[in-house]
View 1 (cartoon, protein in one colour):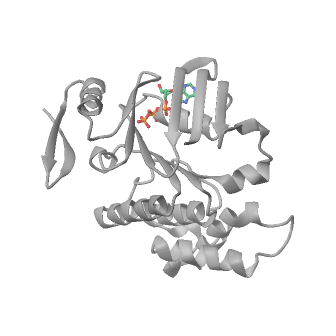
View 2: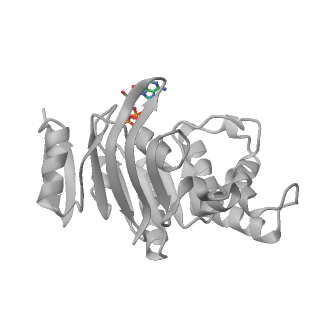
Length: 253
Ligand SMILES: Nc1ncnc2c1ncn2[C@@H]1O[C@H](COP(=O)(O)OP(=O)(O)OP(=O)(O)O)[C@@H](O)[C@H]1O
């Protein structure tokens, strides 16, 4: 069963064709990592799949065309964490995370106790609760990223899409992110993330390997064909090693 599937004929930005002929099925209840070299089209793909940019073709969320979903219902079904998100600098971290609860609230209604509980739980999960009174603009890059991750978690959507969620995170907080993803997937949620950190991506259930605006391969990191595709798109410049049962990718000079 797919949480999200697409048949994208073309995605163009400002008159330039960025993606072409992409057909994907992203399995429900699994973690899929999208990888590939700079400029491959990973962020553009994720944004098209979330309906944030126009596309030629079709995207199905839970087997229903994305654009047929009522906006609020779709916002409850699909949570999004973008790359280098700006805005809301003067809001407190708590209020930023509360924005994740908007799809659950009636127009102009005050947040409910369930909204408060969801915000607190998400901020505790990303260890950002201590900064709840701080303004977003005063936080470091990594602290800010944890608040924005909490906002995405607070939506409590069955599908979580994240573009470079590990940006600015130090190794312990990368490990915490991985633990959060595993907890979500164990609870039946679906996670799709663009990742540059190949050692983390190789722990995903599925990899989508991209190059030059196309999907080159989709499969488990355990499959040799997936690792061959990685080598191909990264110009055979990886050393892929299995250490303690875990695939690692080192840059090769
Ligand atoms: N608004 C735009 N107008 C024209 N071209 C764009 C626009 N946005 C992105 N592109 C181009 O589209 C291509 C894909 O960009 P995208 O950000 O999706 O790649 P990516 O795989 O996420 O890259 P990276 O790993 O460097 O973050 C790049 O060549 C980029 O320069």
